[in-house]
Length: 270
View 1 (cartoon, rainbow, N blue to C red):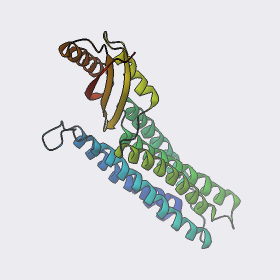
View 2: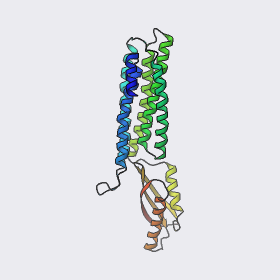
View 3: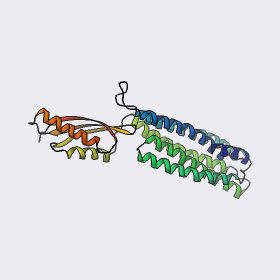
View 4: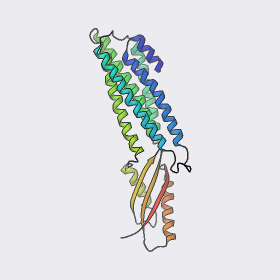
């Protein structure tokens, strides 16, 4: 698809289509990075990395986001040049190519976005936005070329303006993904809903008075939980240990992608 867009853009005199094709080439690069990040992130913990390799997935998303931002800046610079420099309008056949690209890329976006949500993978969602940005770039190119063809002489710069608009959309999504992936790398807090769900599971265990503290961090596709539970201060150490173990097992069995749970017992002060 990248080759078709670039060749069509060259022969059809459309920079927006060429820029679209270059972005598709970089999509291959970023998808390879995401695939590698997911593959490495799935490696189980070992003595060198006792918390696993999950951060590789976040790192892959970070790299994919940086690629998006760089692509957006490169397209923006060249688009400005095309707007300022007079040139011949694009050829009509480029519209057919763009319609095909928009349909295919939107289908790819929906598939990848659903997959990313199903496995809770930020890097896959980032890759999905590569496809969506490709579709938006193609849509902007379609509109720009249509204006240039319909309006005629003096409107050939519409193609460049279309590419400039597309670069802004790509930059915005690249920055958004960069922000979230950096947050994962820095162990930012998970959603309140997820934390409350973990707290609720702990509070349902017999012997638990309340949850004093619950800290959760995401590593790749999985989560690590540190939970402080309050129990009757007069029970035996053995009984307290059993309650803590029950809390841990309940969280691990809750189908929340929790890799490990660290429990801490506090004597109930109520």
